[in-house]
Length: 268
Image (cartoon, rainbow, N blue to C red; front, side, top):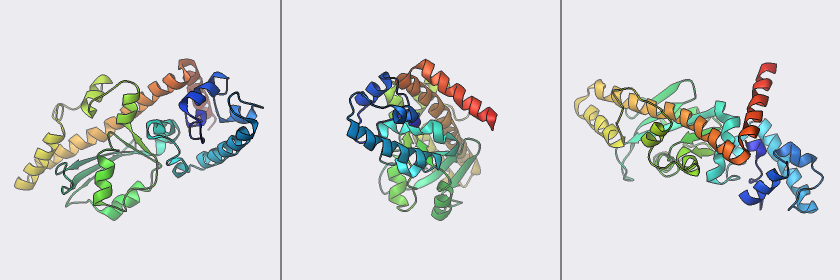
């Protein structure tokens, strides 16, 4: 979808982008090949041509950092189809919401495996920083308001300079509101019986019980709860991105793009 996007260009609004698409110019190559684009002066088109080639070079060199601050936060989802295999899904648990409280658990999911870092056991800022450097896109749910500021305050030098895809913002774009558990139910995502229905308050209680008793049962339950959070983020990201692509480009165009990706995969 990023290769179909023009809103990263200076002074290109979503309205102008829609106008470009309606002219049959659905991607960067179409734009470069067009002799003129309605609504864009010849001089500005030459400028946009240079910027698109610059973006193409960055994208095909897997330079996700190039797109940091170039897309509005509500449109960062457009990077996900290209970088989904190099994205990390992140969720944290804390001792509370106040700024004096601390991170207890950090869960990471790369699409295949989960990694969990726990306060007092294996949560090490340097190791976590090295782990995060392996990814080109950070995916959270409400991370812009909670996870990212919380981590940045406790670990000021931790977070990599990569685009952040906040699923809560993306879900709002397709009319879905509420917390993660409500969104999961909308998409038919189920949890294991033992953690089904748990929320952030329950996670905090589990941490307190573990600290008070030293019983690993409470810690293991907390870790399972957090792991299901990060694993489910990927399912939500896949589904909401698909819906947003259809909303922007239409079902037929999205199906055509999917078939092209599949064909390219067969070649390799």
